[in-house]
Amino acid sequence: CQRIPMKTVCIMSEGNTLGKKKFITPEDLINEPMIHSRRDSAFYRKLEEVFTLHNVKINSWIETRQFNSACMLVAEGRGVSIVSEMDAREYESRGLIIKPFRPVIPHTLMLVRPKHTALSTIALEFLDFFESSLEPFRLK
View 1: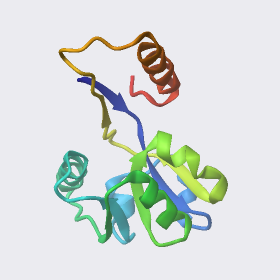
View 2 (view 1 turned 60 degrees about the vertical axis):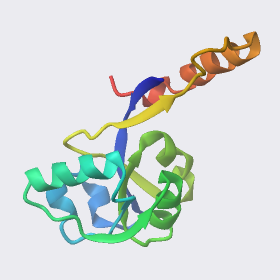
View 3 (view 1 turned 90 degrees about the horizontal axis):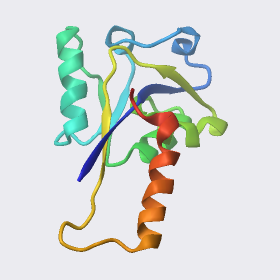
View 4 (view 1 turned 90 degrees about the vertical axis):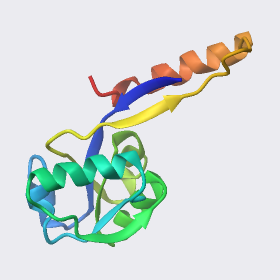
């Protein structure tokens, strides 16, 4: 299993006043309806920890399983979210405003490979291509 730390961003719909800020902090989101990942996910636990350290309670509105669902809901004006930048960029043309979130909360992407079976050449080539496609979104 290979763990790849990915960048995350705060997203909001066009017209949200937070769109004028250079970056977003937990304090900025106090009164914003939050669309977030499942409460039992590692990412949500990290998110909650950061908000707690800043003495901010997450204004939980909608819980979703995947970042792309959160992006769709935010694009419809249903709230704000913190998602992987890779997912957010797919929805940028649909009216999402994308801003850096501070402090950084990485999202971990895991590439799972079979332990006891060698991968075919084409599978290895695909993984190399896939990993290189992640480069702009990796947390460095």
